[in-house]
Figure (tube, rainbow, N blue to C red):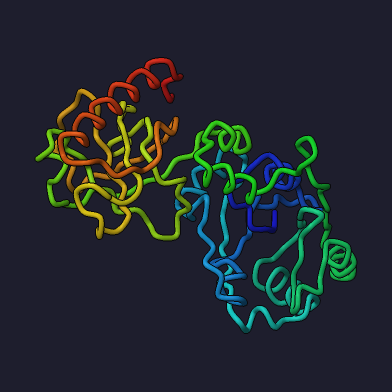
Length: 298
């Protein structure tokens, strides 16, 4: 098993995962390549921190399969689990419950009550229990290491190209289309209003050129607004609205996967609806130009 958070599944995570794929047990029997992580995030339980995820569990499954992983195990993280000593955690959870034969972790892995256990301690405990432990060194990208926090920083700044470079894949999110108030339709720009899982990390608020898949079909060009509606309804909560470019489809109830490609502009308030309409038209033209020049997703 590869043990860790693995949020984002960047190149450093994949090195840890590669250490457990294609393995066989010391007695010759096959092992099941497995990723073991925790849900919710330990910091949510221990400190009340809201930890939005780059990958939700359902998304992570499809990303792990091409890496040779056969199963994803999410250990329910609780206050009781957090109180286990490093030795008890390995014995009770990893060995007794999950039948660990081989374990791979990154060198910064911490576990057990008070985070007292580290990778070296895991190796020592594993040796005593007959479990092979592989510690994978940190992977550096120039002066900084690959990390989920770097990906979050890039997304929070609207730097989608940098986020995609660190992820080595496009950043995406999904949501179900719900009935809105038809404000976009009244302005001549009908939008699909997405209900996105509140645990998903979303990029900087603004207007984006984006690819969109409807119920998993071929990608369609779109312009997306992420954030509030300061001109038409300044008191409304932040929302995700997608307008398909050159298409008119009935989307309520559909599942949309959105791949934002480029930030076109930040949120702003306009003098009135005419100015807003004109800007939306300009946004749509610019989004189409950006997507015409961008690689089409496979």
